[in-house]
Image (cartoon, rainbow, N blue to C red; front, side):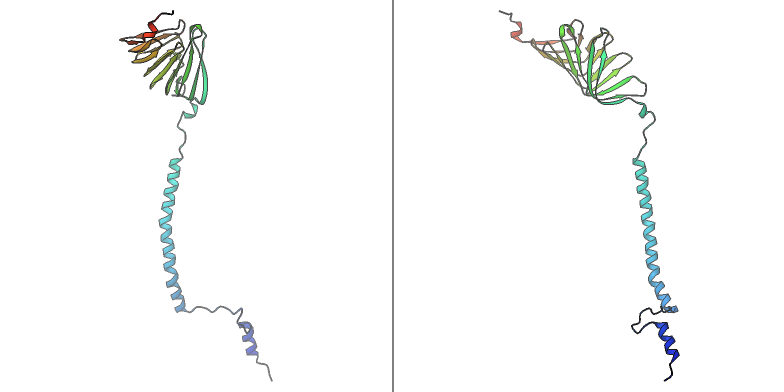
Length: 224
């Protein structure tokens, strides 16, 4: 029997009997139209979603740029120290030590230092001393003075405690003073005055202005 070469050609073109490796059929015009109707809405929806997402991404990027701010001009030139102790010498070469949480120069080159939670120990005559502290203080390098504000607590080694709104320690003239109301307690009793002066050289503490004193009777008794 003669071989049918046409059948052999068709066998090699379509693959084996299991239908593997058959060439893809070309889509006719109607099939292409149906495929376009299915895919075009999907593409349109994808492009529309990009139009919504991209502006949001740009907005987020802009917000990030706003949050990341550069240091202002001059900020890096300011003095800033944390958890420190610094020392000041008065006219009698007495050394006063001051502890602070932070010290910051108010302006570059201003020589005015802002101090957070300053606490200072000031030596006085005959091994006496005055301890003062407040939430905020300012040290002026030009006048060599320390100003404590926002409620000042002071303790004198003679056993006197004081509370006042602010006080100034003048290292140049070796004098501490305040011109606001003072409340004090000690061995003598308690008092209220309009201000005070303290002279470390002599250890004398003077209350100024109108002063009310409630004396402790025991302080008036002599030694037997």
